[in-house]
Image (cartoon, rainbow over the protein chains, first blue to last red):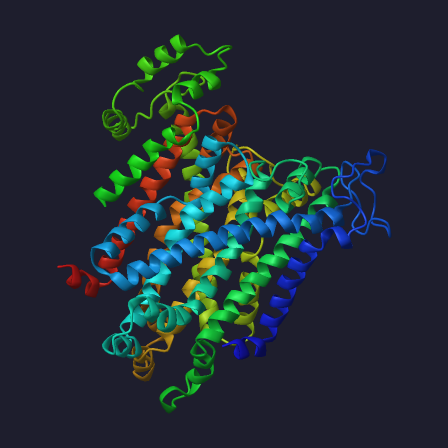
Length: 287
Length: 300
Protein backbone atom coordinates (compact mmCIF):
# COMPACT_ATOMS: atom_id res chain seq x y z
CA UNK A 1 0.00 0.00 0.00
CA UNK A 2 2.78 2.44 0.92
CA UNK A 3 4.49 1.57 -2.35
CA UNK A 4 1.38 2.37 -4.37
CA UNK A 5 1.01 5.59 -2.43
CA UNK A 6 4.54 6.67 -3.27
CA UNK A 7 4.00 5.86 -6.94
CA UNK A 8 1.22 8.45 -6.98
CA UNK A 9 2.95 11.76 -7.72
CA UNK A 10 0.18 13.98 -6.35
CA UNK A 11 0.18 12.02 -3.10
CA UNK A 12 3.92 12.57 -2.71
CA UNK A 13 3.50 16.30 -3.33
CA UNK A 14 0.68 16.39 -0.76
CA UNK A 15 2.75 14.54 1.85
CA UNK A 16 5.73 16.82 1.23
CA UNK A 17 3.54 19.92 1.66
CA UNK A 18 1.98 18.59 4.86
CA UNK A 19 5.42 17.68 6.22
CA UNK A 20 6.70 21.13 5.26
CA UNK A 21 3.85 22.82 7.15
CA UNK A 22 4.54 20.69 10.22
CA UNK A 23 8.29 21.37 10.14
CA UNK A 24 7.71 25.11 9.62
CA UNK A 25 5.25 25.10 12.51
CA UNK A 26 7.66 23.37 14.87
CA UNK A 27 10.69 25.37 13.78
CA UNK A 28 8.84 28.70 13.67
CA UNK A 29 11.10 30.57 16.16
CA UNK A 30 14.28 29.51 14.31
CA UNK A 31 13.09 30.43 10.83
CA UNK A 32 11.33 33.70 11.42
CA UNK A 33 13.33 36.84 12.17
CA UNK A 34 10.43 38.57 13.95
CA UNK A 35 8.22 37.84 16.92
CA UNK A 36 4.62 37.14 15.82
CA UNK A 37 3.18 39.66 18.28
CA UNK A 38 5.83 42.39 18.15
CA UNK A 39 3.91 45.56 17.37
CA UNK A 40 5.38 48.37 15.31
CA UNK A 41 2.56 50.77 14.59
CA UNK A 42 4.79 53.19 12.67
CA UNK A 43 5.30 50.47 10.05
CA UNK A 44 1.71 49.32 9.55
CA UNK A 45 0.43 48.07 6.18
CA UNK A 46 4.00 47.96 4.89
CA UNK A 47 4.27 46.75 1.33
CA UNK A 48 5.97 43.59 0.25
CA UNK A 49 9.70 44.08 0.73
CA UNK A 50 12.85 42.16 1.58
CA UNK A 51 12.41 42.89 5.29
CA UNK A 52 8.76 41.86 5.23
CA UNK A 53 8.25 39.28 2.50
CA UNK A 54 4.47 39.49 2.73
CA UNK A 55 4.20 42.97 4.24
CA UNK A 56 2.82 43.88 7.65
CA UNK A 57 -0.67 44.05 9.13
CA UNK A 58 -2.66 46.80 10.88
CA UNK A 59 -0.35 46.73 13.91
CA UNK A 60 2.85 46.50 11.90
CA UNK A 61 3.33 42.80 12.62
CA UNK A 62 5.12 40.74 9.99
CA UNK A 63 2.51 38.73 8.10
CA UNK A 64 4.81 35.88 7.03
CA UNK A 65 5.94 35.37 10.64
CA UNK A 66 2.35 35.27 11.81
CA UNK A 67 1.40 32.86 9.03
CA UNK A 68 4.15 30.46 10.09
CA UNK A 69 3.33 30.74 13.79
CA UNK A 70 -0.34 30.22 12.91
CA UNK A 71 0.46 26.68 11.79
CA UNK A 72 0.83 25.77 15.45
CA UNK A 73 -2.71 26.45 16.69
CA UNK A 74 -4.37 25.70 13.36
CA UNK A 75 -2.83 22.28 12.79
CA UNK A 76 -1.91 21.32 16.34
CA UNK A 77 -5.41 21.71 17.74
CA UNK A 78 -6.85 19.80 14.83
CA UNK A 79 -4.30 16.99 15.26
CA UNK A 80 -5.10 16.69 18.96
CA UNK A 81 -8.86 16.66 18.31
CA UNK A 82 -8.40 14.16 15.52
CA UNK A 83 -6.23 11.88 17.64
CA UNK A 84 -8.69 11.96 20.52
CA UNK A 85 -11.76 11.35 18.40
CA UNK A 86 -10.09 8.60 16.38
CA UNK A 87 -8.96 6.83 19.55
CA UNK A 88 -12.39 7.02 21.15
CA UNK A 89 -14.10 6.11 17.90
CA UNK A 90 -11.74 3.20 17.23
CA UNK A 91 -12.09 1.79 20.75
CA UNK A 92 -15.87 1.98 20.64
CA UNK A 93 -15.93 0.73 17.07
CA UNK A 94 -13.82 -2.30 17.95
CA UNK A 95 -15.92 -3.11 20.98
CA UNK A 96 -19.11 -2.65 19.00
CA UNK A 97 -18.00 -4.53 15.91
CA UNK A 98 -16.31 -7.40 17.71
CA UNK A 99 -18.68 -8.03 20.62
CA UNK A 100 -21.91 -7.48 18.67
CA UNK A 101 -25.09 -8.21 20.64
CA UNK A 102 -26.57 -5.65 22.99
CA UNK A 103 -23.26 -3.83 23.53
CA UNK A 104 -23.29 -3.09 19.82
CA UNK A 105 -26.90 -1.90 19.94
CA UNK A 106 -26.20 0.45 22.85
CA UNK A 107 -23.11 1.95 21.24
CA UNK A 108 -24.84 2.38 17.90
CA UNK A 109 -27.80 4.19 19.50
CA UNK A 110 -25.33 6.43 21.29
CA UNK A 111 -23.72 7.20 17.93
CA UNK A 112 -27.12 7.97 16.40
CA UNK A 113 -27.79 10.46 19.17
CA UNK A 114 -24.41 12.17 18.83
CA UNK A 115 -24.67 12.29 15.05
CA UNK A 116 -27.94 14.20 15.28
CA UNK A 117 -25.99 17.24 16.47
CA UNK A 118 -23.94 18.90 13.71
CA UNK A 119 -20.49 19.88 14.97
CA UNK A 120 -21.10 23.57 14.23
CA UNK A 121 -24.10 23.56 16.55
CA UNK A 122 -22.36 21.62 19.31
CA UNK A 123 -19.43 24.01 19.12
CA UNK A 124 -21.74 27.02 19.40
CA UNK A 125 -23.54 25.47 22.38
CA UNK A 126 -20.28 24.64 24.17
CA UNK A 127 -18.95 28.13 23.52
CA UNK A 128 -22.15 29.59 24.94
CA UNK A 129 -21.82 27.41 28.04
CA UNK A 130 -18.10 27.41 28.67
CA UNK A 131 -16.94 30.57 26.91
CA UNK A 132 -15.01 31.18 23.68
CA UNK A 133 -11.78 29.31 23.13
CA UNK A 134 -10.14 26.77 20.87
CA UNK A 135 -10.32 24.09 23.60
CA UNK A 136 -14.11 24.16 23.55
CA UNK A 137 -14.19 23.86 19.78
CA UNK A 138 -11.84 20.89 20.06
CA UNK A 139 -14.15 19.36 22.63
CA UNK A 140 -17.07 19.85 20.25
CA UNK A 141 -15.10 18.18 17.45
CA UNK A 142 -14.29 15.21 19.64
CA UNK A 143 -17.89 14.90 20.86
CA UNK A 144 -19.32 14.89 17.36
CA UNK A 145 -16.61 13.12 15.35
CA UNK A 146 -16.02 10.04 17.47
CA UNK A 147 -19.48 8.72 16.60
CA UNK A 148 -18.72 9.03 12.90
CA UNK A 149 -15.36 7.26 13.26
CA UNK A 150 -16.96 4.63 15.46
CA UNK A 151 -19.50 3.77 12.77
CA UNK A 152 -16.96 3.52 9.97
CA UNK A 153 -14.54 1.45 12.05
CA UNK A 154 -17.34 -0.81 13.29
CA UNK A 155 -18.30 -1.61 9.72
CA UNK A 156 -14.77 -2.55 8.74
CA UNK A 157 -14.21 -4.52 11.96
CA UNK A 158 -17.39 -6.51 11.33
CA UNK A 159 -16.28 -7.19 7.79
CA UNK A 160 -12.90 -8.55 8.90
CA UNK A 161 -14.34 -10.43 11.88
CA UNK A 162 -16.39 -12.58 9.55
CA UNK A 163 -13.43 -13.27 7.27
CA UNK A 164 -11.86 -16.73 7.25
CA UNK A 165 -8.52 -15.94 8.85
CA UNK A 166 -10.25 -14.59 11.96
CA UNK A 167 -12.49 -17.65 12.13
CA UNK A 168 -9.42 -19.90 11.96
CA UNK A 169 -7.74 -17.90 14.68
CA UNK A 170 -10.80 -18.39 16.87
CA UNK A 171 -10.88 -22.10 16.17
CA UNK A 172 -7.28 -22.64 17.19
CA UNK A 173 -8.15 -20.92 20.46
CA UNK A 174 -6.47 -17.54 20.16
CA UNK A 175 -7.47 -14.98 22.75
CA UNK A 176 -9.90 -12.28 21.59
CA UNK A 177 -7.46 -9.53 22.51
CA UNK A 178 -4.68 -11.00 20.40
CA UNK A 179 -7.02 -11.65 17.48
CA UNK A 180 -7.98 -8.01 17.52
CA UNK A 181 -4.38 -6.90 17.89
CA UNK A 182 -2.83 -9.20 15.31
CA UNK A 183 -5.54 -9.98 12.79
CA UNK A 184 -8.07 -7.16 12.74
CA UNK A 185 -6.35 -3.97 13.85
CA UNK A 186 -3.67 -3.93 11.11
CA UNK A 187 -6.36 -4.33 8.45
CA UNK A 188 -8.55 -1.51 9.76
CA UNK A 189 -5.59 0.89 9.97
CA UNK A 190 -6.01 1.76 6.29
CA UNK A 191 -9.68 2.63 6.74
CA UNK A 192 -8.81 4.71 9.77
CA UNK A 193 -6.14 6.58 7.78
CA UNK A 194 -8.63 7.44 5.05
CA UNK A 195 -11.36 8.82 7.29
CA UNK A 196 -8.82 10.62 9.45
CA UNK A 197 -7.19 12.42 6.55
CA UNK A 198 -10.49 13.36 4.96
CA UNK A 199 -11.88 14.75 8.19
CA UNK A 200 -8.70 16.78 8.71
CA UNK A 201 -9.92 19.03 5.88
CA UNK A 202 -13.28 19.86 7.36
CA UNK A 203 -11.77 20.27 10.82
CA UNK A 204 -9.14 22.75 9.60
CA UNK A 205 -11.82 24.71 7.75
CA UNK A 206 -14.16 24.71 10.73
CA UNK A 207 -11.63 25.63 13.40
CA UNK A 208 -10.41 28.57 11.34
CA UNK A 209 -14.05 29.42 10.65
CA UNK A 210 -14.73 29.73 14.37
CA UNK A 211 -11.63 31.85 14.86
CA UNK A 212 -12.89 33.99 12.01
CA UNK A 213 -16.12 34.48 13.96
CA UNK A 214 -14.01 35.51 16.95
CA UNK A 215 -15.02 32.46 18.97
CA UNK A 216 -11.88 30.38 18.64
CA UNK A 217 -8.27 31.19 19.39
CA UNK A 218 -7.91 34.29 21.57
CA UNK A 219 -6.76 37.62 20.21
CA UNK A 220 -2.99 38.11 20.02
CA UNK A 221 -2.33 34.49 19.01
CA UNK A 222 -1.66 34.14 15.32
CA UNK A 223 -4.16 31.83 13.63
CA UNK A 224 -5.28 31.83 9.99
CA UNK A 225 -8.97 32.36 10.74
CA UNK A 226 -8.06 35.02 13.29
CA UNK A 227 -5.83 36.79 10.75
CA UNK A 228 -8.65 36.74 8.21
CA UNK A 229 -10.96 38.14 10.84
CA UNK A 230 -8.53 41.01 11.48
CA UNK A 231 -8.10 41.51 7.75
CA UNK A 232 -11.87 41.60 7.28
CA UNK A 233 -12.12 44.71 9.42
CA UNK A 234 -9.92 46.62 6.97
CA UNK A 235 -10.88 44.73 3.82
CA UNK A 236 -12.30 47.78 2.08
CA UNK A 237 -9.14 49.82 2.51
CA UNK A 238 -6.55 47.01 2.44
CA UNK A 239 -8.07 44.05 0.58
CA UNK A 240 -4.62 42.55 -0.05
CA UNK A 241 -4.51 41.49 3.63
CA UNK A 242 -7.05 38.78 2.90
CA UNK A 243 -4.88 36.85 0.45
CA UNK A 244 -2.04 35.23 2.37
CA UNK A 245 -3.95 33.48 5.20
CA UNK A 246 -6.64 32.28 2.81
CA UNK A 247 -4.09 30.77 0.46
CA UNK A 248 -2.29 29.12 3.38
CA UNK A 249 -5.55 27.40 4.32
CA UNK A 250 -6.40 26.38 0.75
CA UNK A 251 -2.99 24.78 0.20
CA UNK A 252 -3.03 22.66 3.36
CA UNK A 253 -6.67 21.60 2.93
CA UNK A 254 -6.04 20.62 -0.68
CA UNK A 255 -3.02 18.58 0.37
CA UNK A 256 -5.09 16.63 2.87
CA UNK A 257 -7.76 16.17 0.21
CA UNK A 258 -5.20 14.73 -2.19
CA UNK A 259 -3.77 12.54 0.53
CA UNK A 260 -7.13 11.06 1.44
CA UNK A 261 -7.98 10.39 -2.21
CA UNK A 262 -4.59 8.80 -2.81
CA UNK A 263 -4.94 6.66 0.33
CA UNK A 264 -8.29 5.46 -0.91
CA UNK A 265 -6.84 4.48 -4.28
CA UNK A 266 -3.78 2.88 -2.67
CA UNK A 267 -6.02 0.83 -0.42
CA UNK A 268 -8.33 -0.28 -3.18
CA UNK A 269 -6.42 -0.27 -6.49
CA UNK A 270 -9.60 -1.39 -8.21
CA UNK A 271 -10.91 2.19 -8.09
CA UNK A 272 -8.19 3.25 -10.52
CA UNK A 273 -8.02 0.12 -12.62
CA UNK A 274 -11.83 0.02 -12.94
CA UNK A 275 -11.58 3.08 -15.13
CA UNK A 276 -9.15 1.47 -17.54
CA UNK A 277 -11.11 -1.77 -17.53
CA UNK A 278 -14.42 -0.20 -18.41
CA UNK A 279 -14.00 0.46 -22.14
CA UNK A 280 -13.42 -3.19 -22.90
CA UNK A 281 -16.06 -4.53 -20.60
CA UNK A 282 -17.41 -7.80 -21.97
CA UNK A 283 -15.52 -7.24 -25.17
CA UNK A 284 -17.79 -4.41 -26.26
CA UNK A 285 -16.55 -0.86 -26.63
CA UNK A 286 -18.90 1.60 -24.94
CA UNK A 287 -19.48 4.77 -26.88
CA UNK B 1 -37.27 7.96 15.50
CA UNK B 2 -39.18 8.87 18.67
CA UNK B 3 -36.71 7.39 21.17
CA UNK B 4 -34.00 9.28 19.31
CA UNK B 5 -35.98 12.53 19.53
CA UNK B 6 -36.48 11.99 23.27
CA UNK B 7 -32.78 11.35 23.85
CA UNK B 8 -31.76 14.35 21.78
CA UNK B 9 -34.20 16.62 23.59
CA UNK B 10 -32.97 15.38 26.97
CA UNK B 11 -29.37 16.19 26.05
CA UNK B 12 -30.39 19.62 24.82
CA UNK B 13 -32.26 20.22 28.05
CA UNK B 14 -29.33 18.96 30.10
CA UNK B 15 -26.98 21.47 28.48
CA UNK B 16 -28.13 24.11 30.96
CA UNK B 17 -26.58 22.09 33.78
CA UNK B 18 -23.21 21.76 32.06
CA UNK B 19 -22.13 25.26 33.05
CA UNK B 20 -19.68 25.51 35.88
CA UNK B 21 -22.06 27.81 37.73
CA UNK B 22 -25.59 27.44 39.02
CA UNK B 23 -28.12 28.33 36.28
CA UNK B 24 -29.73 30.91 38.55
CA UNK B 25 -26.37 32.63 39.01
CA UNK B 26 -25.85 32.49 35.24
CA UNK B 27 -29.19 34.21 34.70
CA UNK B 28 -28.34 36.91 37.23
CA UNK B 29 -24.96 37.43 35.53
CA UNK B 30 -26.64 37.67 32.16
CA UNK B 31 -29.12 40.21 33.46
CA UNK B 32 -26.25 42.16 34.96
CA UNK B 33 -27.40 42.03 38.58
CA UNK B 34 -24.95 44.15 40.63
CA UNK B 35 -24.56 41.82 43.60
CA UNK B 36 -25.85 38.31 43.82
CA UNK B 37 -27.47 37.52 47.14
CA UNK B 38 -28.79 34.09 48.20
CA UNK B 39 -32.21 35.72 48.35
CA UNK B 40 -32.02 36.73 44.67
CA UNK B 41 -30.91 33.23 43.74
CA UNK B 42 -33.91 31.79 45.57
CA UNK B 43 -36.23 34.14 43.72
CA UNK B 44 -34.82 33.15 40.34
CA UNK B 45 -34.95 29.47 41.29
CA UNK B 46 -38.62 29.81 42.14
CA UNK B 47 -39.34 31.89 39.03
CA UNK B 48 -37.70 29.46 36.59
CA UNK B 49 -38.58 26.32 38.57
CA UNK B 50 -34.94 25.31 39.14
CA UNK B 51 -35.76 23.94 42.61
CA UNK B 52 -37.95 21.17 41.24
CA UNK B 53 -36.62 17.68 40.51
CA UNK B 54 -34.71 17.42 37.26
CA UNK B 55 -37.12 15.05 35.52
CA UNK B 56 -40.13 17.23 36.30
CA UNK B 57 -38.28 20.24 34.93
CA UNK B 58 -37.43 18.27 31.84
CA UNK B 59 -41.03 17.18 31.38
CA UNK B 60 -42.32 20.74 31.68
CA UNK B 61 -39.65 21.99 29.29
CA UNK B 62 -40.43 19.23 26.79
CA UNK B 63 -44.19 19.88 26.84
CA UNK B 64 -43.50 23.58 26.27
CA UNK B 65 -41.02 22.83 23.49
CA UNK B 66 -43.53 20.60 21.70
CA UNK B 67 -45.87 23.59 21.71
CA UNK B 68 -42.99 25.61 20.23
CA UNK B 69 -42.57 27.55 23.44
CA UNK B 70 -38.86 27.69 24.22
CA UNK B 71 -39.10 29.69 27.42
CA UNK B 72 -38.15 33.31 27.96
CA UNK B 73 -34.94 35.07 27.07
CA UNK B 74 -32.65 35.69 30.06
CA UNK B 75 -31.93 39.20 28.82
CA UNK B 76 -35.07 40.76 27.41
CA UNK B 77 -37.65 38.56 29.13
CA UNK B 78 -39.41 38.12 25.75
CA UNK B 79 -40.39 34.71 24.57
CA UNK B 80 -37.54 32.95 22.80
CA UNK B 81 -39.94 31.64 20.16
CA UNK B 82 -40.80 35.21 19.21
CA UNK B 83 -37.12 36.01 18.65
CA UNK B 84 -36.31 32.77 16.90
CA UNK B 85 -39.25 32.49 14.50
CA UNK B 86 -38.37 35.35 12.10
CA UNK B 87 -34.68 34.40 12.19
CA UNK B 88 -35.56 30.78 11.54
CA UNK B 89 -37.59 31.67 8.46
CA UNK B 90 -34.79 33.88 7.12
CA UNK B 91 -32.30 31.04 7.50
CA UNK B 92 -34.81 28.61 6.04
CA UNK B 93 -35.27 30.81 2.96
CA UNK B 94 -31.53 30.99 2.42
CA UNK B 95 -31.12 27.25 3.02
CA UNK B 96 -33.91 26.31 0.63
CA UNK B 97 -32.56 28.53 -2.16
CA UNK B 98 -28.98 27.41 -1.52
CA UNK B 99 -29.87 23.71 -1.34
CA UNK B 100 -31.81 23.95 -4.59
CA UNK B 101 -28.81 25.61 -6.21
CA UNK B 102 -26.45 22.99 -4.77
CA UNK B 103 -28.61 20.06 -5.91
CA UNK B 104 -29.08 21.52 -9.37
CA UNK B 105 -25.39 22.36 -9.85
CA UNK B 106 -24.04 19.09 -8.52
CA UNK B 107 -26.46 16.95 -10.54
CA UNK B 108 -25.73 18.86 -13.75
CA UNK B 109 -21.99 18.71 -13.23
CA UNK B 110 -22.16 15.08 -12.11
CA UNK B 111 -24.11 14.01 -15.18
CA UNK B 112 -21.91 15.94 -17.61
CA UNK B 113 -18.77 14.62 -16.00
CA UNK B 114 -20.00 11.01 -15.88
CA UNK B 115 -20.93 11.11 -19.56
CA UNK B 116 -17.54 12.49 -20.54
CA UNK B 117 -15.66 10.33 -18.02
CA UNK B 118 -11.93 10.47 -18.61
CA UNK B 119 -12.16 13.16 -21.27
CA UNK B 120 -11.45 16.88 -21.02
CA UNK B 121 -14.77 18.25 -19.63
CA UNK B 122 -14.71 15.59 -16.92
CA UNK B 123 -11.16 16.42 -15.96
CA UNK B 124 -11.84 20.14 -15.84
CA UNK B 125 -14.97 19.71 -13.71
CA UNK B 126 -13.23 17.29 -11.36
CA UNK B 127 -10.22 19.47 -10.71
CA UNK B 128 -12.48 22.50 -10.27
CA UNK B 129 -14.61 20.62 -7.74
CA UNK B 130 -11.49 19.48 -5.98
CA UNK B 131 -10.26 23.04 -5.68
CA UNK B 132 -13.64 24.33 -4.51
CA UNK B 133 -13.92 21.87 -1.62
CA UNK B 134 -10.68 23.22 -0.20
CA UNK B 135 -11.83 26.85 -0.16
CA UNK B 136 -12.91 28.27 3.20
CA UNK B 137 -16.40 29.67 2.58
CA UNK B 138 -15.84 32.78 4.70
CA UNK B 139 -12.76 33.64 2.69
CA UNK B 140 -14.58 33.27 -0.64
CA UNK B 141 -17.42 35.35 0.79
CA UNK B 142 -15.08 38.17 1.78
CA UNK B 143 -13.38 38.06 -1.61
CA UNK B 144 -16.74 38.28 -3.36
CA UNK B 145 -17.75 41.22 -1.22
CA UNK B 146 -14.52 43.03 -2.04
CA UNK B 147 -14.85 42.35 -5.75
CA UNK B 148 -18.54 42.36 -6.61
CA UNK B 149 -19.93 44.70 -4.00
CA UNK B 150 -17.13 47.17 -3.46
CA UNK B 151 -15.08 47.28 -6.65
CA UNK B 152 -17.89 46.71 -9.16
CA UNK B 153 -20.66 47.91 -6.85
CA UNK B 154 -23.06 45.41 -8.41
CA UNK B 155 -24.54 43.62 -5.43
CA UNK B 156 -25.44 44.55 -1.85
CA UNK B 157 -22.77 43.68 0.72
CA UNK B 158 -25.08 42.57 3.47
CA UNK B 159 -28.55 42.26 4.89
CA UNK B 160 -31.72 40.92 3.37
CA UNK B 161 -33.43 43.38 1.04
CA UNK B 162 -34.89 41.80 -2.04
CA UNK B 163 -33.75 39.17 -4.46
CA UNK B 164 -30.27 40.51 -5.15
CA UNK B 165 -29.30 39.94 -1.51
CA UNK B 166 -29.53 36.21 -2.15
CA UNK B 167 -27.05 36.14 -5.02
CA UNK B 168 -23.77 36.36 -3.12
CA UNK B 169 -24.58 34.13 -0.11
CA UNK B 170 -26.18 31.48 -2.30
CA UNK B 171 -23.23 31.49 -4.70
CA UNK B 172 -20.74 31.12 -1.88
CA UNK B 173 -22.65 28.27 -0.22
CA UNK B 174 -23.12 26.53 -3.56
CA UNK B 175 -19.42 26.80 -4.36
CA UNK B 176 -18.42 25.29 -1.06
CA UNK B 177 -20.87 22.37 -1.07
CA UNK B 178 -21.41 21.55 -4.76
CA UNK B 179 -17.91 20.09 -5.03
CA UNK B 180 -18.67 17.52 -2.36
CA UNK B 181 -22.06 16.38 -3.68
CA UNK B 182 -20.89 16.46 -7.27
CA UNK B 183 -18.51 13.62 -6.45
CA UNK B 184 -21.34 11.48 -5.08
CA UNK B 185 -23.52 12.08 -8.11
CA UNK B 186 -20.65 11.39 -10.50
CA UNK B 187 -19.54 8.15 -8.89
CA UNK B 188 -23.06 6.71 -8.77
CA UNK B 189 -23.69 7.82 -12.37
CA UNK B 190 -20.48 6.14 -13.55
CA UNK B 191 -21.42 3.00 -11.65
CA UNK B 192 -24.87 2.88 -13.26
CA UNK B 193 -23.58 3.66 -16.76
CA UNK B 194 -21.45 0.52 -16.60
CA UNK B 195 -24.35 -1.75 -15.70
CA UNK B 196 -25.69 -4.34 -18.09
CA UNK B 197 -29.13 -2.78 -18.47
CA UNK B 198 -27.58 0.33 -20.04
CA UNK B 199 -25.75 -1.82 -22.55
CA UNK B 200 -28.99 -3.69 -23.24
CA UNK B 201 -30.99 -0.50 -23.73
CA UNK B 202 -28.34 0.81 -26.11
CA UNK B 203 -28.29 -2.47 -27.99
CA UNK B 204 -32.06 -2.26 -28.36
CA UNK B 205 -31.62 1.12 -30.00
CA UNK B 206 -33.42 3.09 -27.29
CA UNK B 207 -32.93 6.85 -27.60
CA UNK B 208 -30.07 8.15 -25.51
CA UNK B 209 -32.35 10.58 -23.65
CA UNK B 210 -34.52 7.67 -22.50
CA UNK B 211 -31.45 5.75 -21.43
CA UNK B 212 -30.39 8.76 -19.42
CA UNK B 213 -33.74 8.86 -17.61
CA UNK B 214 -33.30 5.25 -16.54
CA UNK B 215 -29.76 5.87 -15.40
CA UNK B 216 -30.66 9.06 -13.55
CA UNK B 217 -33.47 7.39 -11.64
CA UNK B 218 -31.12 4.74 -10.34
CA UNK B 219 -28.13 6.99 -9.81
CA UNK B 220 -30.01 9.65 -7.90
CA UNK B 221 -31.20 7.24 -5.23
CA UNK B 222 -27.90 7.48 -3.44
CA UNK B 223 -27.78 11.21 -4.02
CA UNK B 224 -31.27 11.78 -2.62
CA UNK B 225 -30.45 10.37 0.78
CA UNK B 226 -27.19 12.28 0.94
CA UNK B 227 -28.94 15.53 0.02
CA UNK B 228 -31.70 14.97 2.57
CA UNK B 229 -29.23 14.29 5.33
CA UNK B 230 -27.11 17.28 4.47
CA UNK B 231 -29.82 19.95 4.39
CA UNK B 232 -29.77 20.39 8.20
CA UNK B 233 -25.96 20.33 8.02
CA UNK B 234 -26.03 23.11 5.44
CA UNK B 235 -28.41 25.01 7.67
CA UNK B 236 -26.08 24.66 10.66
CA UNK B 237 -23.10 25.64 8.54
CA UNK B 238 -24.82 28.89 7.55
CA UNK B 239 -23.55 30.52 10.77
CA UNK B 240 -20.40 31.85 9.12
CA UNK B 241 -22.14 32.97 5.93
CA UNK B 242 -24.83 34.76 7.92
CA UNK B 243 -22.19 36.51 9.97
CA UNK B 244 -20.32 37.81 6.90
CA UNK B 245 -23.39 38.89 4.95
CA UNK B 246 -25.19 40.17 8.09
CA UNK B 247 -28.09 37.89 7.21
CA UNK B 248 -30.76 38.23 9.94
CA UNK B 249 -30.99 34.48 10.50
CA UNK B 250 -30.57 31.83 13.18
CA UNK B 251 -26.77 31.78 13.04
CA UNK B 252 -26.55 35.53 13.49
CA UNK B 253 -29.06 35.36 16.34
CA UNK B 254 -27.19 32.59 18.12
CA UNK B 255 -23.87 34.44 17.78
CA UNK B 256 -25.53 37.42 19.42
CA UNK B 257 -27.00 35.16 22.09
CA UNK B 258 -23.53 33.78 22.82
CA UNK B 259 -22.18 37.27 23.43
CA UNK B 260 -25.15 38.11 25.66
CA UNK B 261 -25.00 34.74 27.48
CA UNK B 262 -28.66 34.28 26.57
CA UNK B 263 -28.72 30.52 26.85
CA UNK B 264 -32.38 29.63 26.07
CA UNK B 265 -31.89 30.97 22.54
CA UNK B 266 -28.91 28.65 21.97
CA UNK B 267 -30.85 25.78 23.48
CA UNK B 268 -33.74 26.33 21.11
CA UNK B 269 -31.30 26.58 18.19
CA UNK B 270 -29.60 23.29 19.10
CA UNK B 271 -32.96 21.58 19.53
CA UNK B 272 -34.33 22.85 16.21
CA UNK B 273 -31.27 21.73 14.21
CA UNK B 274 -31.13 18.31 15.90
CA UNK B 275 -34.84 17.67 15.39
CA UNK B 276 -34.58 18.78 11.75
CA UNK B 277 -31.67 16.41 11.29
CA UNK B 278 -33.65 13.44 12.59
CA UNK B 279 -36.73 14.40 10.57
CA UNK B 280 -34.71 14.73 7.37
CA UNK B 281 -32.97 11.41 8.00
CA UNK B 282 -36.33 9.70 8.30
CA UNK B 283 -37.49 11.55 5.20
CA UNK B 284 -34.48 10.22 3.30
CA UNK B 285 -35.48 6.67 4.24
CA UNK B 286 -39.07 7.27 3.15
CA UNK B 287 -38.05 8.78 -0.21
CA UNK B 288 -35.62 5.96 -0.84
CA UNK B 289 -38.28 3.36 -0.09
CA UNK B 290 -40.58 5.15 -2.50
CA UNK B 291 -37.93 5.27 -5.24
CA UNK B 292 -36.70 1.75 -4.71
CA UNK B 293 -39.42 -0.89 -4.26
CA UNK B 294 -36.82 -3.48 -3.23
CA UNK B 295 -36.18 -1.62 0.03
CA UNK B 296 -39.90 -1.57 0.77
CA UNK B 297 -40.14 -5.34 0.54
CA UNK B 298 -37.33 -5.77 3.01
CA UNK B 299 -39.13 -3.64 5.58
CA UNK B 300 -42.48 -5.33 5.08
